[in-house]
Image (cartoon, rainbow, N blue to C red; front, side):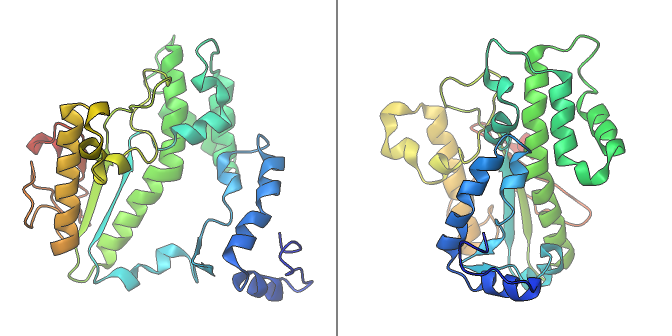
Length: 273
């Protein structure tokens, strides 16, 4: 990649400094061929080494050390219940094939790829957690869903929860809010066990069920109304429950000692907290 953008240097520090100043589009495009070459030889996680780039500037330090910069800003973060499904389908293609079974070996192989820096004990520990509800003869669909759950946890849920905790720990007068978006997917052709796909929340947040009413049901408009209310209240006041828009339930703040979240779907009530 450094060669492609004219940054190859024998001195690694000088090379990194050059990469930091490179055009972000050229830097991103320089990695695409390499991504295609290694696809299938690791996990999806291996393909996003250059993700921590914002407007061409590398994040200056470990993100966990930077949350003091957000101490005075209200913070909202969450995940979709099956954010990792699309990526899991790349790592373990059998999960989306009706006629193919996903083997225990495939699950263990995925865990080995995601935890390789931790060694064999991590694979065994993680597998015991994720297979704890399988029983002696697990349903093939349960094994496939487990693969998607693993990828969702690794790529989305755990990092998001850590970010929420870091913000809450560093907050100075600011509030922290956590959510899980759990509206079942509307994408045709997926197995019945697939839940809320990556980015499926956006159509509701930006009001698509109202602008294209013929392809949505009333429950989808209910969800869209709720999300618009929470997000606009948050933008106005820093609290999704307070503002000019009425919401179906109070969304409590996430704190150091009270790690609460709101389960977002078309049936939001007090029990969704």
